Length: 361
Image (tube, helix red, strand yellow):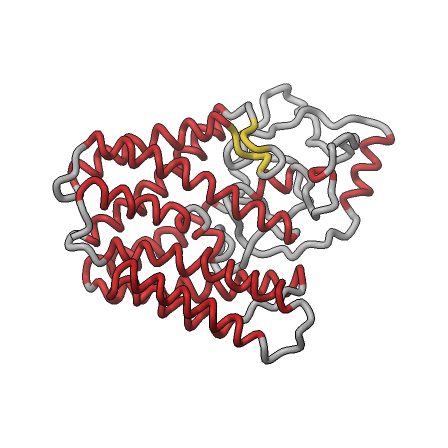
């Protein structure tokens, strides 16, 4: 996911290797050591996100850094010491795998138990994730940009939006979204008018980005085989993420979006697509009523693309805010939003294709 600190020596990125050669001698190296001791205007958090370890390796500590210019500045970062044995340096995943795996297994157990035992309990899990995600997002906006997106109407409206989608379908979700936006406009009127437009715009964006997109998971859940649809959605997103990590870490050489997330590679994207398409074919054939394997190939391809775009989208937000994680609630992962980045934009894609392939009942 990410490294322990922004000042760590360069290591392998999430979607591609960033191995460095021997450290240069002389004043350039000394300048790099001095530069590493300077304070960085960021808010570090425990754990992390899959691409941010690579982001930190590129020196993107704040929005004024070289990543956001033409990158003509010389690389004065300290390099790894030369290997006296002449052997190839070991690649590192750039995250606390033990903590990440433990948290992931725990979350998976909670999700599966609630999903297949009693659907409303899983709906409650979605609501909790939405509220915590909104809290993380609005807190970072306030800390880093002094943007006062009102949390109370967002949290209440987000919870209502999710429940309305499960009970009333897409129409219910849209109505709840409209009332949430109205509540944000009115709530912000209780404060001075300075930056009113900026704050309500951020609030409506937060309402769309977190609870409205999460509502599509509730729409999937409402179907007769809703538990299996949601499970397929989760499996494909995780498999896409894993395929990108595995292939990019081992074979990644060509950057996918160096200005946004320098660790992601084209090879990693190919791995995500390949893994997700295979998993999609299996899931549609064996888990979804009336599903066919070729539909799973299309579904897997769409999931890999949407998950990657969602990952890049949150990377853009975090770069603009100058932070490496949205929170620190999940050791080895970062915050809730650092886990939802791929899931949120993928949910409407999976819901729409499921409806097109096998219907909504």
